[in-house]
Image (tube, rainbow, N blue to C red):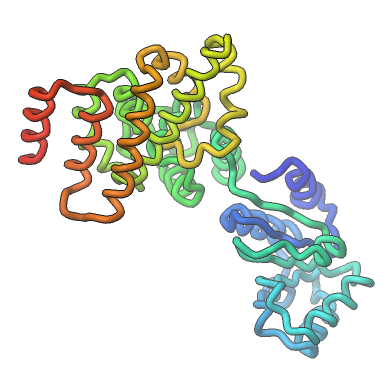
Length: 360
């Protein structure tokens, strides 16, 4: 899924057969870009002879004569022809001039797909002369919608809300990895609805044993529960000490924001209502569905003073620097020490637990 405007254009082409002469796909999410590119190619060509009607090339490898020949060739035994030019911004000057001349008067039986890679500045001229399709990384609140959409559109299966939360809680917001796990889940259910049991069986995560559950245990200052969950959390896909520290940082910035809301006269309703807006301002990696976060803040904010939160954020900053600068200790040792610091365990208990953890 991408922006509503982009989705509208894609739907018109993919399901309605209404193709523009040229599309310009840009933005920082290459996975969504490639997904849309595949959909457009499939819809435009259908069962046509692809060997004769599909050209895939890179901008930097084309000269004016080559791109002119590609754009001027009519379809063979098909309604249309598709030309894909990746990294269109790398076209040489003469090739770009040939493309610009073509876009001023495009052929009615050819669809041209132009792309720019993530990190590249959008080409305003291409955006004006072709139909622009923007693909930016999905914010956390849109990941659940994408999971539901991908399961239905690619695999033809539905997925329960609980399974969506569990999958995102275990895998995070990495779309390619989510797509892989959804493919496994769809195969596991044989076309039936994907539920929490299917996610648990395929991905190896269970309700109450996610990064979100670990964060909630720390937010509740439940040292024992956090330490119990830690080893299993670190075994999950794409989870390590650095990503957990990032997720905890997002949580504690949220707790600090929630505390400020209350200090200004707000209440839990205010936190629930305005929480997504705060996250969109730049929460970074959260390690869990956005919908869970305002609920967690309202449940735990009163357990933390302003001084506590300042100390927690300082500890997280120190842990982040330490993890990047040193590999002397294991991730589990680093995290066990951080759990004790954040939860505020007593000195004696903290020493006993840290010692026990270091010998695991």
